Picture 1 (cartoon, rainbow, N blue to C red):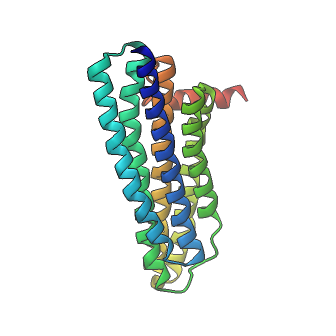
Picture 2 (cartoon, helix red, strand yellow):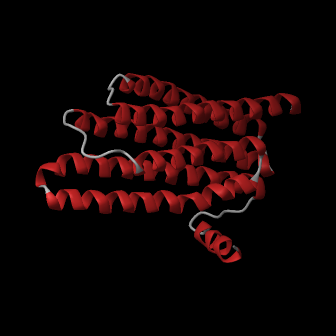
Picture 3 (tube, rainbow, N blue to C red):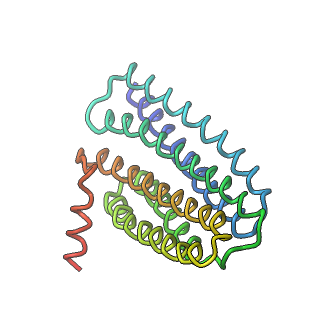
Length: 228
């Protein structure tokens, strides 16, 4: 019986990792649509969204069933609760990829406003946060999860930088406002990806250590900066 329980837990972990990989590639494809100005990537993103949504249902159903039948305790019950919450975060990351594609569609209808510099870097950091949060899950490594928490400020800083730069475009030429607003919204979408990755990292820490750091990880970031 215990062996069967361990196999079920492992299957849920594998499905979470697969779901996370799909969500990460959705973000990558959405950015390629923007940078390469090719709306064919939109179809890839929507196809993967269906897979992400399907996995969310599968994982949630498995977590409920295992909890009801096996009545786990300790870190096992924390894992099952965490899994259900992480599926929600990953599904929302997929939603942000769809939003990026929708905002990119508006940009493809007009000439490029400016070369892309900050947004690709911001996207790279956000994708790395998603990847690291899942790596922390696979390795049961709190240090990797804590590293994700420290990256959130970088994403926020790029969001602010993008906004300030595009604001100067809009003030100088009102005709740029629609394109600038779409780019600002994309930076906001990427910020939300970072937020969801941070939430996943917090869940992993809770699972491993039983330590709930939601709303308190800013204190950890402050300690890190003071120690360097």
